[in-house]
Image 1 (spheres, rainbow, N blue to C red):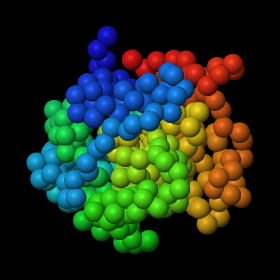
Image 2 (image 1 turned 90 degrees about the vertical axis):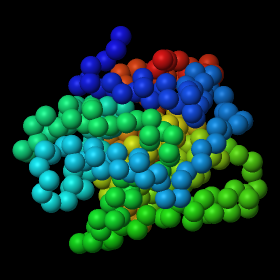
Image 3 (image 1 turned 120 degrees about the vertical axis):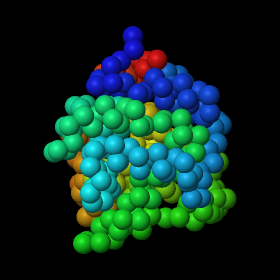
Image 4 (image 1 turned 180 degrees about the vertical axis):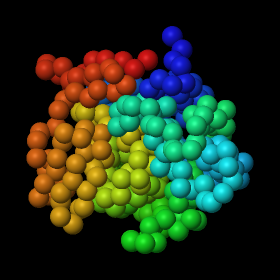
Length: 283
């Protein structure tokens, strides 16, 4: 059954289709969820150093489509666009269709026409993070300086080459931002514990992971991992994916034990008591 553009997860089938053609990471995520086995090989994704001009313009067009006027900076609509996109892809953190910004009636219909998912999948890059940086996001507080892709790539290669274990790894990112280093590490890891205190940044990171690294966006229970809104210096935070899960004292110790089940787009995945296999299917 084809979902309407106003329903939670309506864009996910198109993402799965494109992933099957260009990346294969969602298929790997599904296989791992169903079998409970750790994959030996990770489909590789080459993230562009500066993005793609056409794709960046498409993202800008989406932001401009939210309002029919041309006044002011359209970057102010990035929070709404991020929520809208996460909702369209069926992320469990945004289960209610976000309200259109004031004075932007019809924004949702215009976004459906402006958004070209294929451009994002075929030209992988942190486009929203790039736009935030160019607009000076956070200049009234801690400034936002996303790690350049080529630097993130070099850091990932260095970390992997110096590791004593073989991939796939579990990654711990104490200051995740929009997830650039984590995206590079997604070529070597299938689980991530990422901390970030800025809610907008963690949402953009989650969106990037939905597009390019689903095992970071929707952690596989048997592998662990989480995205946490919090401060690693105090060790206090709350799970972005499971809001009822609080972290205290240390960044690695949740206040409550992790559940072996995960609800994704209305479907519950649960670990069998007799083994590691998980039941449930998104497809």
